[in-house]
Image (cartoon, rainbow, N blue to C red; front, side):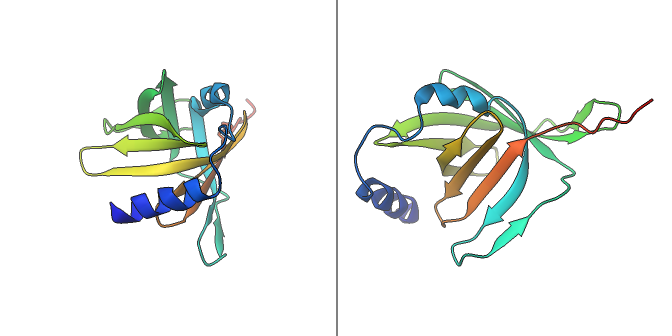
Length: 140
């Protein structure tokens, strides 16, 4: 918890201003997302070219959920019944995504979002970049 408070303090030190991400852009979180890259505090990065699982996010009025999905070649998805509850709150100039599951609670700061990409940073300074999932289309 102290790491989260420290991280939030650093973010607030960057300046108390209007949110750098317009609130109306939070609607872009809805839908299917696949991780594209992870950036580590030491500057190293891991790129993901193929993902066996993707995230489905549903958000309305700052509350919703995230669920892991496995896309199938026929256009359907396989999923477990595990759901992470999601709450988005504004703290000064930032939006904080708070997750809660049966096993854990954690927070990430929304760094960037548009209709095709978004990225978040966790308390350890790891940045996760996502791109909108595009199903593989196999010609018949």
